[in-house]
Length: 591
Image (cartoon, rainbow, N blue to C red; front, side, top):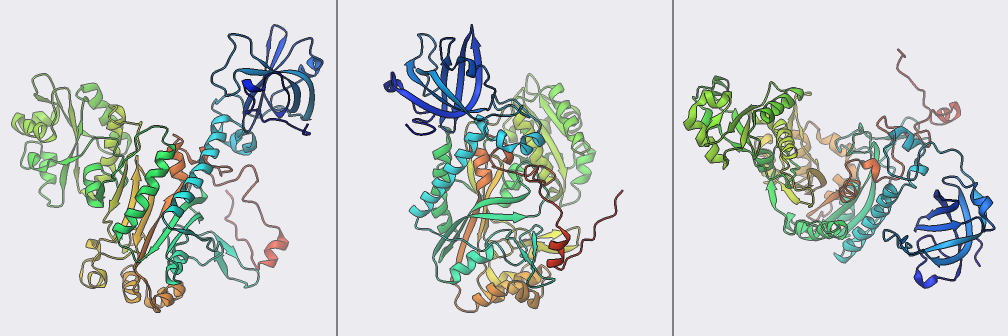
């Protein structure tokens, strides 16, 4: 018999009854039922119930067992007594009568329990992540992550893509976040950057004559952490294709992403034919460029009903042509208590409030706004929104450029409070026609709104003749259930258009050549039209596992302060290391 096991803890079945078996694993828990000891023995594959009674030669040793000890158990497989079967376990019809044990690794008192799924402080969980990872749900999430990666690779190869690995030590690139810099020992005073994404390399692969690239790529960004964005590093399904239009990218990737979701949706519906929603429409209807389409609330402009009305606050706003009034319908929200609660919520979000109209029995509008604009306008709003008695509508007003994000938050809040979100489905959509540029209020300049390497719609002519803030790009995102899970674009592959695009954002031609010299040179020697995208592996797995925190699907994540509590990173470098790198530290003053 093998030194440690003849079977795993998930392998034994009825067909093994009367055999002698050897298992090794962790003591999940010990139960004492009237002097009979039941040991749930756990390994990666499952749990097997083991039994010792006072007649067992190992009984005295089993009494010493404690949670998470690693032990070897030898014994005879037998059927569980009638009425004690456990249909929740694949091994639930059998148990092992213990004849011999060996303690392979005793465990000290646990800083957090492994048995059960109770909440525990995050910093303790991360410091003792090796214990946390033994817990059933987190362990299964990690296995799901691996299976999702397998599904991605399989589906990409079926679509004719080839897997490549791009460099980790590279040059700095404007991907929208801070770089992690790596000092060069050989070149004093110079630094590598960890890639924020393999953007330039994957485009260079297209210049090199490879046709369909993909990679499960590590990406590094020095960003502040949040629940749906890990600090430091993340992984993405990185994709690039030559000789393609936007429609070609969609046709190749939509079945891949749909198929991955279907593989792990556990029966939940997944969108078959994805809608294509222009950015401006997404903002207008949903107040988000990553709308949650499970929420059926659609916002509408209702400015005409307030223009020249008795509600002077809105009427005066509408004298400025750029201002609008949007309505957010709230089916079933027509009670004073609920409307007041929404108003208080808006104030908590830093807004002056959230105006509302509610429709009571008979269909008459009620509330301060209804009293000010009168019954005819109130009825017209109700008809436009398709509402009835017992419903309400909430209103935001001003410059849509400034309020659309708040309107989107209000739509989400209403959907949650009124149970209008079907949470048992995955709603996928393409968001298209992103603006090429946006105005950076802080720095008072035009800047890229998305990926700087995208092709503007209208090409070089648009860059030369249009107001930059009106130019749309061949850029697109994939939205799922309120999250952006992928982003991509058709690339700007013409050197003169690339230089002009960066010039509008404040980069001179020489700066473009200095920073993106490899790609700039490549464009001079026969550049194919190309495009692609990158899908966030971590966010996809997070959605499929039904959690809203990336730490629940990552092996060894950092905490909210970007610290690895298990390994003690970041840590100070020794004087010898700093000297070799020609670096001195200039720390901020304490206190």
